[in-house]
Amino acid sequence: AAGLRVAESAVSIGDAVGWSKMIFGGMLAFEDPENPRGREVLEDLMENASTPMLAYYATLIESGRREFLGDLEGALALAAQAARIEGADSDATRTLMQVHLKLGNLAGAERVFADDSLPPVRLNDMAWLLATVDLSTVDDPEVLASVADAAIEYGERAVAETPEVRTRWNTLGACVNRAGRYDEALAAYEESMAVYEGVGTWADWFGLAICHAELGDADTARIWFERARVY
Image (tube, rainbow, N blue to C red):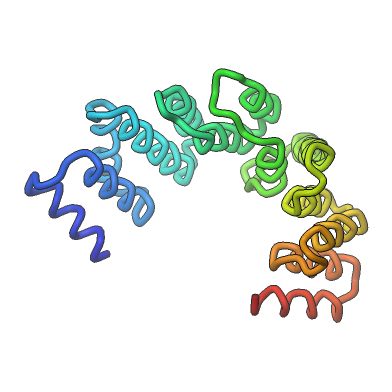
């Protein structure tokens, strides 16, 4: 709240422009997405920013604000706009794919992933997004199953490409975990730990806790959960 007041003061007295306005609009967007002042600041920057990067971040934040409010079509249009701005990075591509998925459009997300004209997203990032995206807006079981299958496909491809990288195995664990294939998830998390000096990290341990709990082994699940919690 204090930072919000400082940023608002800087904007109102004209001592700072551009980035100060973007910070102020962004803070408003996250603290109170329904506040019209935040939208006004961000939309002004989108139209009148002095640099492409200012326009990029303002557009991406406004896309996120609309996504939070449930305006997925508006969020999709802005994410697509942000991804085409000079200097855009993979955050815009991931946001664009995420909104497609929340709309139940797996094919749209995969088209974005394959679009060479957009900032590239790694196989592992695509798999992680598919495994973790909030799909509470989707009620079609066929779409949900397709997203789960696609997550596993991308996760397996990422592991095949760089099996020596721990995070690839952890991501694959998350993918098969979401699909309810807990024995396979256990194996993936254990491989992740083996690659990481046989110890692993909290991400592996939380995954193991979930799998053991789902498989009915509450005692083992509790051990891994406590280890992850105090990490």
